[in-house]
Length: 537
Image 1 (cartoon, one colour):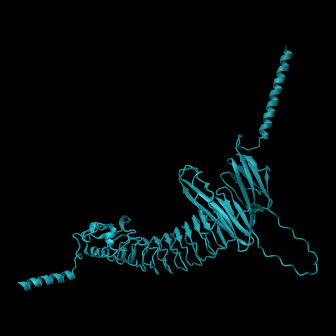
Image 2 (image 1 turned 180 degrees about the vertical axis):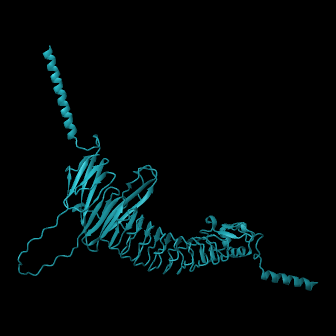
Image 3 (image 1 turned 60 degrees about the vertical axis):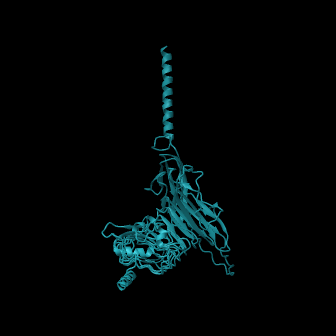
């Protein structure tokens, strides 16, 4: 009898050793999913004395899946894991160790952001749609067996490689702040958001990603970036690279651009008429052309220096414009803030924008002034741009031009006939003071034909059927008309007063003459009547 009892006890111990407590799934739960997830929850967390399960809930019970916070099971029999980290319950919980969800065939979403995971196995997950595993300690991530993946957020890890060639449905990718040296997106034609900044990328080919609306590739080692195929692009952040040029002519929907800290010598965004935010700072830039809020802004350099431009837009939700806080958005600029411009008449949810052009002299040189069409407009390095008000053609003047060497005396040559000096572009107006009434007309005559006109269509309408342009005032105010021929630009300011006359023209002389004639006729009739009355008497 004792031998039988001893044999039974030893057999039980052996069975427990082979099938430890906890390996058996709770009733109604799939054994594979239950066992692997339970194994992770029982691992030590990054907080001493607590398991991962205890970090999720003080009521954690390894045998009761209803206490596994953030885990959603489906309604199949047996139940399978559908979501991990639901409702952000696994974020920032100091979870640690290896999370193996391989073979979770019903898993669609996993969110384990901001923990201390060292590995994540997502192999054989045929319906996995979203992976959010940023801010962990992952050195590798294999998503090749996740064919339905649309969103991958794996930033701020230690990844040295990322293969997404099998993820043809991928639409959203954040892999910034890793150690990637290459990234191939040629198989991801549905990709519309790409953030791969702060890696070690030396090249980036996005020609196959025609659906992209956002590209963030700053703080890499890119020497070139071709975005000509990305016609839907709205936001481009490429600061902190080694770009010597940037062609934006194909990106007509672009609304935000950040290209600071590159090697750009010029920037032409004049065809990107939807741009509302731009930052081009700390480049060796001598020419910048942009079109913002319907106005052309041109910055150029005379002498040894560079130009920067910074324009920021934000929403303001305040009824008190005077006391509204102005954010300091100028990076590397000394101004404490930039003046906001009210561009929307609705004060409750208004768009605010502010802009500044900055003159930056080369080392050892001095900034002199800003000029526009030869006239000094400021001696301050930072020149405030009134957005939505007028066009700008600013030149930053610096010292430091190389002195002209004294020539070696030579015999005086026979004077040649002097060449005709080139014409200096001028505009004349009629009336000469440029003042008209609404509905009235002003004629602007250039001394050089063949140029282009730039004006605000809400203030003026233009007729260019003759060499002289004829503009009609539409509403009261002051507006600028700019005329450009080749490298020359000239402008006139037109003052439009509110008219009390009919809209057929502003010339009051005809009406005044008619009134005088009418008065004379009336006076003559009265004199004749008086005279006739006296004769009858």
